[in-house]
Length: 301
Image (cartoon, rainbow, N blue to C red; front, side, top):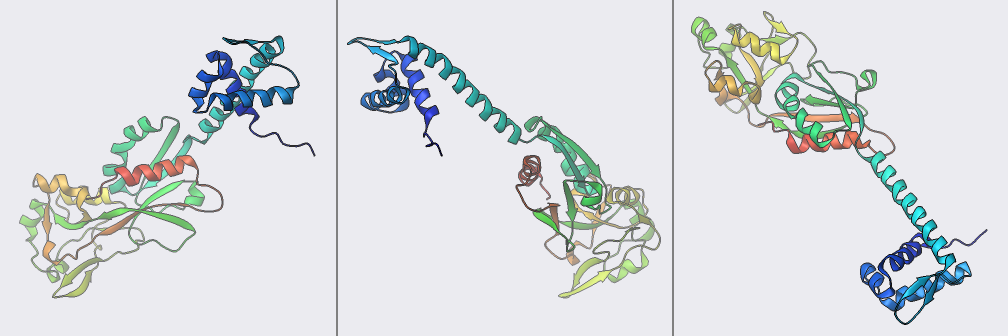
């Protein structure tokens, strides 16, 4: 087996720099080497090639004809190496199609407003976003990342927590004028509570009364398919709704919705996670870039 020559490209780069800078001392400064070290390196190169590359005088170096041919070929080889490294680096940069699903509140109010910034930062990624409160199967939908709220079911997916969102119970002034304002958790039983028409991990509304955890089950009159529909129905005076606080901040601020029973609502919030398919090998650069971007930019409270 032939002996592996070490750092031949490095020797070429030093040789080329000696030619371009016109001497050992100037090339040595560029590489933070001593002139004697550069001279010895060129000498070893000449020994290996079996020919003289420079004619040396007391004042200047002159390339031999062999040295000129080697210089021209070395330039081509170094350019090829640099091009190969750039191609690999470019291939590893975030690029390609990225399919993301997000629940309605986070998707509409936190993720979509950030898409222009993501596009500016990662112009080679094509972002395909589906906003829905339906829990989608990443394998069947061929999605890369799903942003989900609440406790996660056991699966082969990997989760990255983005934070927690504070929840709130709210209703419109028109509904409260017509049906009265509930001042206790028990009073909710006589009100229209807007629920959802699909299976949810935690369908009940949690409260804390006198240090005890209690819950109320919504639905029965109005059930909707997503949180945005629930918000619109509440704004129209259709009933009392439970939504992420950031989802209704604007409506609470301008008086179109009023927060109810906040003193009975337990602290903390609902976890928001970005989940993705794990497995062997490295995480695709486009997925890692999106996860890092979400962790950096999505604000839930």
